[in-house]
Length: 152
Image 1 (cartoon, rainbow, N blue to C red):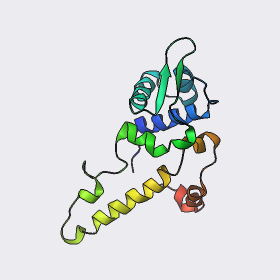
Image 2 (image 1 turned 60 degrees about the horizontal axis):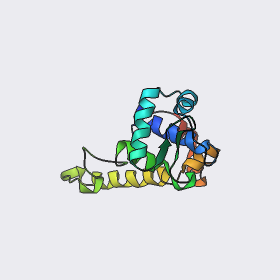
Image 3 (image 1 turned 180 degrees about the horizontal axis):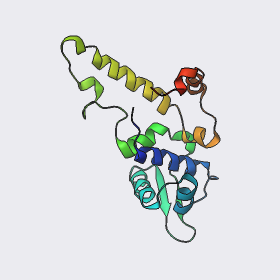
Image 4 (image 1 turned 135 degrees about the horizontal axis):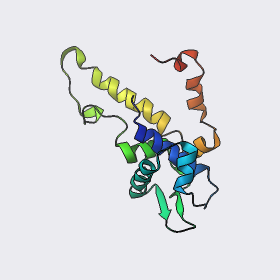
């Protein structure tokens, strides 16, 4: 799975908003500095998240951005879908919609299973989990084997 810079920035920005005290408006410059996200790029991402109804903004000296819902009700998957679309697609199609022939027939089931695994992790981790550094047990369990930390 390839995570674009835009998606990475969006999740990091949302996590930073989740870390703010409830009701506090967070300045874009603050998010940009803490997360090392170029400000123009961040503004575009926040606009997409606002359009998707995941964040809200307020202008003025006391303005900024905040999550539109409680952090424990927003998942990493919600942020990814808002800026990047579906979690998994095969040449623009949903995995269950692709058709293969011959020896590749089971490949569709493989893609669907991959999407299910991604959903389990990305829908199972809330912005509150990121903000507090407390990942769910089912995600932490995936991290215990040494080989998961080696790139291949």
